[in-house]
Amino acid sequence: MTTIRRFCCDDLLRFSSVNLDHLTETFNMSFYMTYLARWPDYFHVAEAPGNRVMGYIMGKVEGQGESWHGHVTAVTVAPEFRRQQLAKKLMNLLEDISDKIDKAYFVDLFVRASNTPAIKMYEKLDYVIYRRVLRYYSGEEDGLDMRKALSRDVDRKSIIPLKRPVTPDELEYD
Image 1 (cartoon, rainbow, N blue to C red):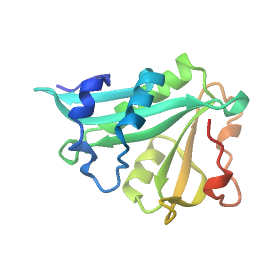
Image 2 (image 1 turned 120 degrees about the vertical axis):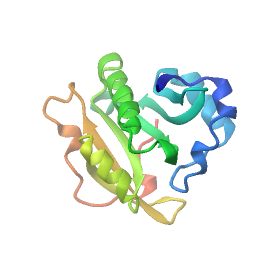
Image 3 (image 1 turned 60 degrees about the vertical axis):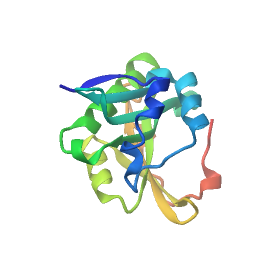
């Protein structure tokens, strides 16, 4: 049975095997600690029996006005636990928190343009490609900014795609 619970400090010492996937961004310890301290509601881990880490999601809420949104910083599932809808469950959890608790307009995420399996998964979860970000990943690979409108965005303005690609310096960060 899978258990999904809030991420805690001890998990930082147990989740490195999940991050071995070449498409998963690995951050330094202080980055994870900042998320854990500032946005604990947006940081969850999925565990198998025996407390084995299956995957996790890390995110935050940011922006102002109609740009107020939930952001998926990382979602990853260990290869042996894929194809079990675990990423979908983790994404739904973050979306629900963004929608019902923080009253966000949308949820967004960035994905490598070459990561076709992830893009297809996000599209099945009703995400759309909002814009292409040129050389987003290490100044080399383009990223796709994908978004999903939430209930507060009645007119779905947040997901109207931009007509041109942007560069990383054009992105707004909070």
